[in-house]
Length: 582
Ligand code: HAS
Ligand code: CU1
Image (cartoon, rainbow, N blue to C red):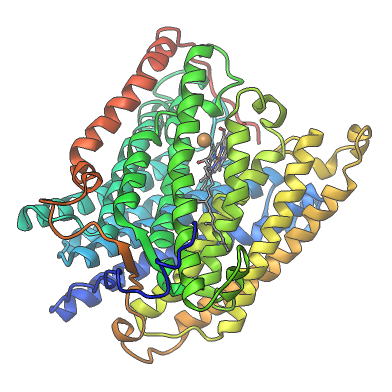
């Protein structure tokens, strides 16, 4: 931000922070908080197990094979089973449960609307049932398929059925949130949807478009095939449907973090949201453009023309723009906060930020990691660079500083105010929580450095590399990046132990006060507000408000960008039988 003696510290031009609409029915509010807490705690239980497997992976890429030690052999059949559990629990289960709770609770509170609690519990139970059904084959080594479960590698039907139920239940949350928003619209004609609700509804709408690919893949192709009802499956069709969802899912993971960065981080920092109309534009760009880009995961695949791959590539570059808008806009909020505390200089103001406060440091360090993760993403998306890093250790390097840090560290930070808010309990130790946050950030940065580096040397991803002859890479020594990767695994284990100690101590402690009062939803002041009424509002606000119509456009766009590709694949389908590799 070009700063701005006029912008800070006098806050005369600000709009006060939003106040959560009062919900007079205390029993209903308690119920809403309870179901949210169930989602969030289930999410962190999945992360707990998933994260404990992480260091085994890091040590493997550090050249140390712990999978063959007797203790680990007793628990996990192979590196690939460990990796499958790690990916599914962290990337798919943790995120989906957390988001389903967080983005159900936020719009319900922001709009002050009632939701049907029976339906909310039904959805939670269904999602958990799906998870448990899928967990059986995963734990018994009958679905060691990695988290992308590409056919013709075949797993137990229970895995696909459980996954379908789990993902399907997230669509029920979509229905509940969109329905709540439409009821609010009817009750409040001519009003601007409040920002947090707007962002939540847009995220859910995006997910509904995105999820169609994987739902089609699993329900119509993989379940009938794994049950033996059809003889074969076309791997390329499956993979293409998978990446229809698989790319956009990364925005489903990161947009809830964006909501926290935009709406709550300024409050934690002591600053203000810069521009509500701009935030709304950002989310509409994500709604429209997140999905029709998935072919950047398939540059190396045959039978998809270079023309379509190139179009998806350009659309991928386009989807970096709302992230860049976010970077500058949230940085401006941080600078606003720091200058209000007397921060000076081009960069010196950063020292005035509350770095020791974990609800602040978690999302900000998550964002710092995302600067590098995003830059790496642009490299991945460039079809000229992609062949260098595709399927190498670079890719897990990339996604541990995106989903593994930008998302996960932000969610950890959110838990530190959300759990007290929901339960009236307190963090047992701010210092320990802060140490957990910083070590997570450092551990992930070191991991990313090691893995990106190994990738550039040509070390493949998803391989028990520690069991190979390391001299394969003798032209370029990999000892240094290997050492970095191994060390990062240990740092991350220490960090996880601290974080989960704080989380579980907090959850098991007694309620000390009313979370509504001691930890209200941390809304922030706003510099440029969207206003209350559509009439007379900024054009950006008016054009972004009709989310239902924009949802239709998003669907149309994805059909345009995927329809011809899939039509050609179906016309040339070559189903093959399945195979169990494990
Ligand atoms: Fe990615 C592969 C391209 C973003 C996750 N990605 C993956 C995989 C995962 C993943 C899990 O084009 C592996 C899939 C697999 O298993 O095969 N990715 C991108 C691009 C972006 C991107 C262009 N990825 C993400 C996000 C993820 C994620 C977000 C999860 C949450 N990715 C790819 C490609 C591949 C890929 C290819 C396939 C590679 C292959 O060959 O297989 C973009 O959206 C990134 C845009 C982001 C930015 C950064 C903005 C920065 C911000 C922070 C600002 C910080 C501030 C703090 C303000 C342009 C918003 C300042 C601090 C102060 C103190 C002042
Ligand atoms: Cu992608």
